[in-house]
Image (cartoon, rainbow, N blue to C red; front, top):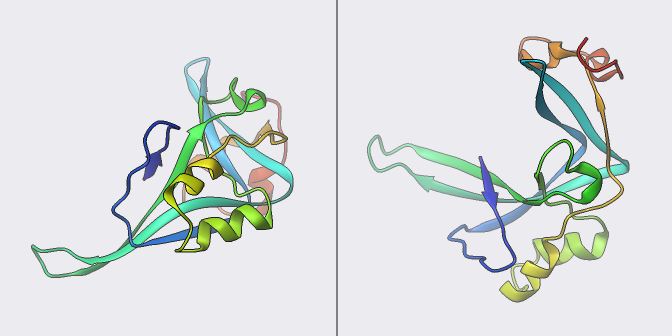
Length: 145
């Protein structure tokens, strides 16, 4: 699940902010009628902005942990791949402000900016199946193979 952010709207009912550390993430683009996965990454590890909450589902009374990734418009270097991208907490200052519950809503909105400097490359279509695993899935390939 993703939560969309625009500069004109920012409302939430979530209980906690979190960040997801990662080396990169995959996006898919349809090419010649087939989905081609692309790995999006930067020179350094990434931290993606998110929200989470623990709540009780009223019907079965089951305790649930739910989360969402915050997205915003893509930076120009990623727009050919997709018009939306996860919000990257590019540096320690932005990350700390995101995680601090005392940070004002107006300040949070200023953290939600597209991050330039990311790159993407085609990776194996085998990444589309959850049963496949291994570092070779993210090896660069020619698109469409």
